[in-house]
Image (cartoon, rainbow over all chains, first blue to last red; front, side):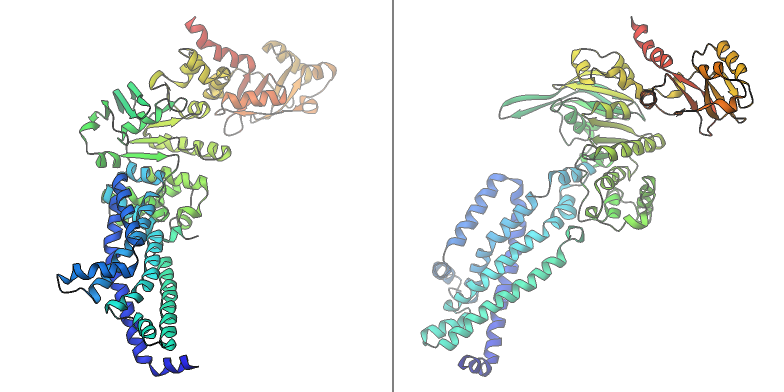
Length: 216
Length: 374
């Protein structure tokens, strides 16, 4: 009951924080896609480099987010952005690399040898093969990687409130510091709901982007 | 025409150096189907794939219609060669129309032209464009997919086609049908085709020439009939099978062994006339009965003619089977065995009697090539 009253009386704050949160994740994962998808495609050309890249991305993802923020403070202070928006986006960008690169790499590599040979034998250049065959066939798996990244980073972004990046994490951190369970619970539920809604929307998008011939 | 000169491929594998193709030299004349045949790992596929440079030759060269392909850029080269593979390789993200039109699109045909071409090709393999153009590959059966695979390769009308076990993944019944369809198409299109197979029956059926490979070497390159009647060594003998004389049966049509001077009786001839005709023609057992249009109706056997009196029309027995001019001897032999017959009447497309096929005629024809060499 208390919680509902809290929500009703703080609707505009809640909306503002949610939008902030979404904006952070969208910008960061968006940038991560622009970076991760080309990397994932590029490393299919060389198995050794692929192993190094995927290994590095796996290590990055094991760093606890709070530690990552800590590491970035002195580094980014040099350009005057030790805390706030910039380190939050960078952290999410880094965390998103593994699911996006790995899924892209796996998807492109999994295009059947028969199709690859047919494409080659027909006289497609390697760019045409990517554009007309390999990428369209990989879209569902790449999108699945993007979904993982988004859902995971909605959680990570909640912690970014501690370095002043804003978002729904603000409610949680305030709830803890002020021993106010209302804010804590509302913050936590809002973050979870956001993750669920985002996943559902992205799943719908994934289905729309999947070539018709692959849907059964 | 495809000219292969000293084509060699050496693979560097972890187990050491493997010579997959060893100085292969052969020619595929314009408009013929050359089947590369051999056990797996014999180099037939490697040789085929060096023609469109999916596999880069270690040495040697390939000339297509006199032009050295080593000098050509691989993309252009491949767009001028139709390529059909066992896995078919239809792009699942594209419709049938898009799959067929892919090469014409790549070489810059306009939309109207390649759309028309796609419909034309579908009709050629007996598939309705209205139904199939908009479909996706996963909505088609295996046989239909392979037909699309073949017509995709034909789309830009390339003079040369490479086919790597194209019908290998299809069930035996459909395979026969598709092979027949393809041969019919080929009689129209007259492409120069290299075709990899491991099935001697398929090779005998499809090939104008067969090239037998073993351990990277070309062992024998001959017409199917020469290959079956004169295998060069024990390996070829073993590969073509101990029933190779029987396999030759399907290379010969009824027309080639037909005995056209067949004596016949008509409906209103008497049985005694029938006996006389049998004696004159030297038939021991029976004579064919035909109607006024010379269509075979039945036969009069000698025993019946001897034991009875009257017209042939009252005493004939029904024919057990007839064959057609274009049937091959394998079909004929099979019918002879089924009906315990030593001869069968042969009719043309209008059902009119053309003559007879006899067991003796068949053995004589097949034996002729052996005698010629001895």
